[in-house]
Image (tube, rainbow, N blue to C red):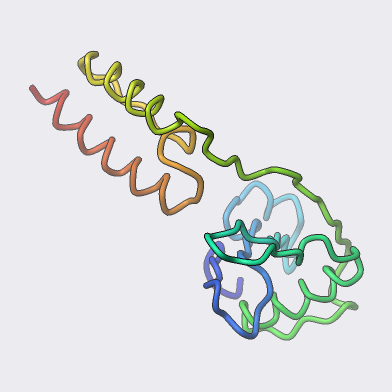
Length: 156
């Protein structure tokens, strides 16, 4: 396997259009076992959420063939393995419309209420994007904090 289970791509990366690559057969052994030796399953993600003052990212709205070509080029750069169309057994484009939820008015207050209610129950913590916010970094950091807090709480 080239390296690792995936990579997140910095917003300002110039040579890659994808925002992330998941090397699924490196991440999940059951998938690697089902595909056979030398066969890899990759998922590349396109289209970023907007920050204040940013223009809409329409990368993911491009035609399927253009996204496939971009995926080949991006995977080659990210994995540092030259890939060509002939190397691909099959591919598909899946579009997730509205996949990243945005916070609604009052969301921060609702999160604070949930956190306060959970704090009243000894030995209970809750985690996930519904509380921590979207994105692996936010969820991972919050989960680490919450599990450390839970471990300390159940010691006493």
